[in-house]
Structures are given as structure tokens and as C-alpha cells.
Length: 448
Length: 91
Image (tube, rainbow over all chains, first blue to last red; front, side, top):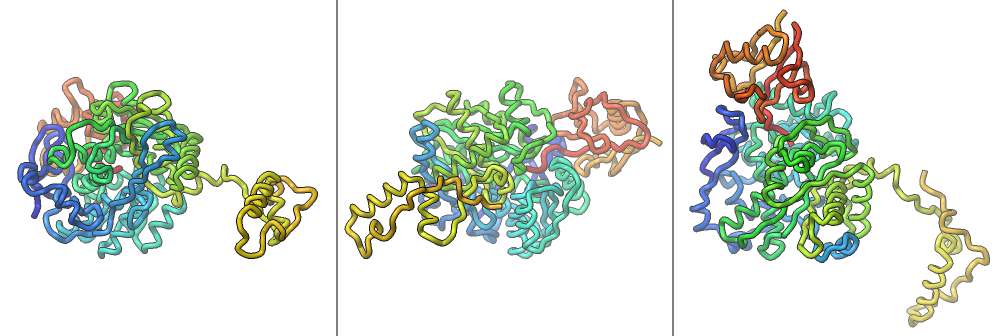
């Protein structure tokens, strides 16, 4: 049963019937899915959700589908990780990581929005789906598109990270590289969707697609025990995700699943592509497009479609926004990896590094719960780390060679611990003598 | 040779179905004025009361977003292409 009542213009409130359209004919404003919340309030509750399988579709009444044929039943419900070690490093009491780096099937939050968009494309009878992408969306449209039997047409900037290109072409889809930046790719896709009538997930299917991002907010609240976090820090490219996370909390409040209250939404962008952060910081809320220059390619959108709404959502929630340099975002990737064992892509590094700044400046108080939204997987953007990767020693397969790469103190400590413990078999402490002259650890041969 | 203006489908109700229109002028503002004069239904949709390009409208002159150029005062010459596209897409 569907609770969707149609599409409404966010600017002038003109109403439209549900159809593959995203733009108001009166004012060019974006269309937003409207739901019958009164009816939902009577039928939808925590127990509805709890009784279902652990995927984003446990919130299906709040997603804009009309039928029962869901494409991507397994998507979502990623871990909310309690991040005590990272909290310690950032000097805060309570910190969580919403880890969409392990989303199914393509390791980014885009799996959520694509699952909704393809479900909708099938309902509309479309047979070809496509997107303009900075990489993660391409991966997801490719994987989910082929799995569900769509023809695909995916456009990306020609110079994307190799892993993101490979992670698209491996599915045997039609991928087209465009000699230009994302904003140019996006413009071309608007023209293609206009001419061919294909289902471009982030163009003419955008109102439906965007709703998938609400499930990040739904899941965070549920995983916190049906509570809002005081703060969410989220990276921004087009700005839709942050806006929809806020909408997700508000819908749960409206339906009585969580209490009233505020969640301060904080946005993060790379310094080389920061139009939304600039709009928040200068107080104008108006987006001035930029030419993107950053290693965080998935955030390199110079003219963000939801920038205005993201800046407004941040301001209204009492949150703030911060930008970080490429060096800072690489530090952010390392910090998250070294403390929590989570390898985020460059965008996640932006989120961590921006959170660090927001905490240091007092914009995020140290004693309130914070959730960092990690949107993509570090294995897709290893290029960003290669030049700064620490060398590790390579040794001959001999015990003395191994001992040489440990510091003297480490060897002594390991040997004394081994001799203290009751030996399960031959004792380590008697198995080998320590060479008289130990080489320092740096003598290991680095990888070429 | 005048300037060619590409009209997106969402606006073609106002342009009697025309996908592209040829107009003359020295600036983008001249072109938009010419467009609004020919199709009165477009007046107020692309530009606000002070002539500013509306938030949800992107206009390109030969591939470049005019917000990165000089907005309505961006010069145009014969043979240029002006593309009007709804802003809300992508991401």
C-alpha cells in the first residue's frame, strides 16, 4: 500500500501527480515527494519496522514506491559503530560512525538512492536507466542496473579514479567518459534525459532517488535506541544527503517514533570545492558555483543542486559547516582507519577532518552525542594515499631478520612476556639468542 | 548569424514547442529580454523582478555557467550557443 500523495514543488507548492519529473513547470523549483502522514501515523510504528528484515526497506512506507516489487531488498541497514577510540582522539564523550562504506552491493550510500530509483523506474515502465556520476553512483547504477535487467547509460568525468571506472565497467554496462568536470557531465545528462526519456536516477527520477537518503537518518535513530543524535556530521557534494538525513529525523518525530528535539546538522566539504560551506559561513545561504579542485573526487560538484537547501538545513538546525584541505582529509582517512579500523574514501576523510575542526572550535560541544556519516569505501580511492603511505619492512624468512626489524625494547618485552607465561610447548625465550648488533627498524626495504 | 538559445522541455509549453530559438543581442541580458518578448509566458520564470537569474535556472554561454562569467551582462556574439537548463539535477 502506498502512502505517496504526489509531488509538490518545494518553492511554490504547485502539486503534480506522481510521474518521472523533477522540475516545477511554474518556477523551475525542485519537486518533493508528498506523503499522507495522517494515514501513516495510524499504521506505521516502531513495531512495524522491528518486525522486518534488516535493510533500508524496513521503512518502505516512508519511501516513494507504489507497488510491492522492490529492487534491492538487501540494501542498507549498515552498522552504527560506537567509536570510543576515535572519540578519545577527538576529545569527545560519545561518538558513532554510520558506516555506509560497507553498504550492499557497491560500498557506498548511493546503493540506497539507486535501489529506490530503480524500483521507481520499473514502476514507470522504463527500460534504460542512467546517471551523471562522480564515481560511487556509477558503480551502484551499474551493479544494480544489470542485476535487475535494465539497459544502462552512465556518464562520468573522463579522469575519475581508476577503481571507480573499473568498478563500473566490470558489470558490462555502457559507460561514457566526458571530457569535462562533473558539472558539465551533469548538464549533458539533463539534456540526454530531456531528449531520450531515459530514467536518469539523479535527473528525472531525482525526487524519488533522493528519498532513499532518508534511510540513513532512520537507521541512525533506530540504532541509537529510537533517539536523535545531538549532532550529525556529513560530507556534502550536491547537498542532498545532509538535507534528507534531517528530513528522516523529522519524519520519525512527526510519526511519533522518536521524541521532539533537534539534531544539529553539520556539513563538510573539501577546501577546493566548498560552495555550500561558503554559503553557510558568509550567512547568505546563496550558492556561488566554483570550479572544483580537490582529490575528494566524489565531492567535486561545483554547482550543487541542493546546495541552497543544505545550507538552509544547516542554519535552521543550529549546525555549522567546515572545509578541509586535501592534506587534512588524508589525515582524516588515517585517523579513522587507525582508531576504528574503518577505511573510508576521500569523502569520509573530509567528514572526519571537518568534525575535528568543528569540535576544536567549539561548534560541536564535547559532551553531546555525535554521529559521523561515512559514505564510501577507501578501497575505491587508494590513489589519494599512495604518495603518503608508510613503508613497511621486507625481510628474509629468518627469525633473526624478523628480530632486526623490531626495536630492542619490543624484543625484550616480547621475550620477557613469553618467559613469564607457562610454556604451551617449546619456550620462545630459549629458542633464539638476540643478535649482538640489531639494525634499526628503518633498515627494512620499502616496497617499490 | 544570431545566437542560438536551447529551450528545455519543461519550458516548451511557453515556447509553443520550440526547442531552439534564434535571437540577436550583445549580452545575455539582451538575449533573455528578446526571448521574453517573443514568448511572454517566460517572463518572470527565468529572471526575477530585478533581472537576476533565478536560483533554480542554470544558463550557459558556450559551455560556461554564466554565474562563473558575468551573469546577465556576459557578452554574446554571433554563433554563440545559450543553453537554459533546470538547476536541480545531479549529486
